[in-house]
Length: 69
Image (tube, rainbow, N blue to C red):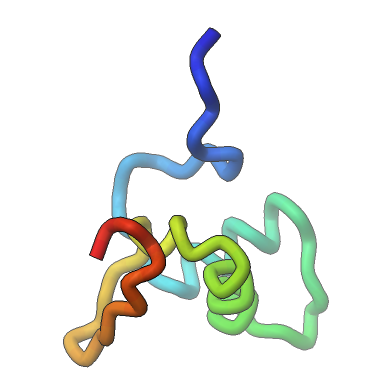
């Protein structure tokens, strides 16, 4: 049996933080008063291994806890 490494079933591409937050909202729901950006950031703080799927800004500073940067 194949191990599932991506319970979000993300495509093999990079997402903006807003796109990522929208995926989280569509999959799990979320408070309408929280933007997709904040929702994405909150999810990444809990599950940092997903940060490999996020497009990095020019001033990005690696947190060294995602395993990919």
